Image 1 (cartoon, rainbow, N blue to C red):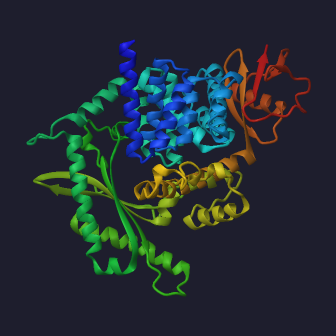
Image 2: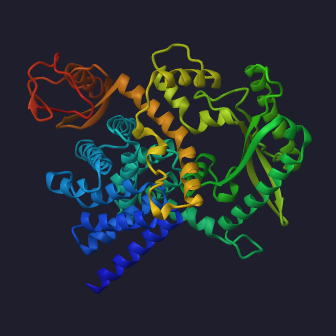
Image 3: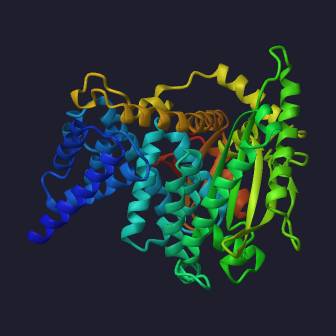
Length: 528
């Protein structure tokens, strides 16, 4: 008992510290503590586990208190009548989140029980899209993503690891939660490929010759110095300063999973041989030089400004002489519309030579790359024989789509963590208010793009489970498909005709295959 009490104290203290760091009020912390106790029905061990689960949502994802409360009940209880009465005392928003997360978990369980061969990426794509189209609130996806990460931290579940890698990590990227994405990939990498994981992490932990810092620590120091120098170079150039409205330089070190994949592709034996193991990115926006300046003219100058910024960088950080890996994705965009300038630079720092990648792009190009707009357009245009992959085409299409659709409030970044002016603990807390507004500003474009993808998927597809003796599967069918269409798709994928058996749709016998319609997440069972 003493050990359980100690563990509970440590878990609750860890959660409290994370909430304090993310500017939760004292009243929100107390409310969550009460909710955890109610959800766990006073069970000390369950309270400790629920606190650890909520910690992921607070520390890694900065989710609002309603999400944390719903998550506590989601972890401790099932979605039945006995638990609903306890959840209800915390308000309708918590109840809806609790039920939504439970619905997503049920779909995941169906997938796990039916689809046993999960090495094909298409199946994971379909599961990811099924979860996206089934949810009514993006925060339920966040809860399920946290549940996946929590499970991986506790177990060596390979099925869950694949789900993390192929379903929840991509969703975390689309939600703008990059730290969550990195942690999901890292834990999945550790579980699925333990030998390779150990190798990459050990290489990063080695001491670089001549100093007492690990390679990973040294990479961070090199980037911090180069970032500061690059900001000074750009700000100090008169032409760049006079024609740029704003710019931002960001730095990143490849995470272990991404590093390993790159090492495989390049057949590198060490992380130091990966040319883009560390990278700096410049994102800029040009000034409008005259009130009546046409937008097309400004965009043309903005593209030219990207080349000029790259030229400034190359004067300080010379392209790698033996392999500069110069790539002009502005002139030659990738098939998905990605545009940016890349090159590998040689960087000398404190007597050491480092290679790093330098990228330059405009804010508009960054939106296409970052928010998944290209993927959205690609889904919409699959039937088109000729596609326009330019940034202008993406953004024009999505602006039109934005006006055609009314975005539900549950997909609004401002709906998660709100500034409560009636809370006495929040009185005059400018840091908290700024934190909330900045978080919403960061999430908003991601959620807007993700919701557009959701609407498009709902308009065009149904994702159906087909359960047979030989092999279960999840398939994508046209939105108005019938049971007959599902059988046709099953024959197309397996090559086996369904003859002489009975059909069950969600456990009920199908009388007419051509008139029986399908709904998202339906289970069609083929009994031979």
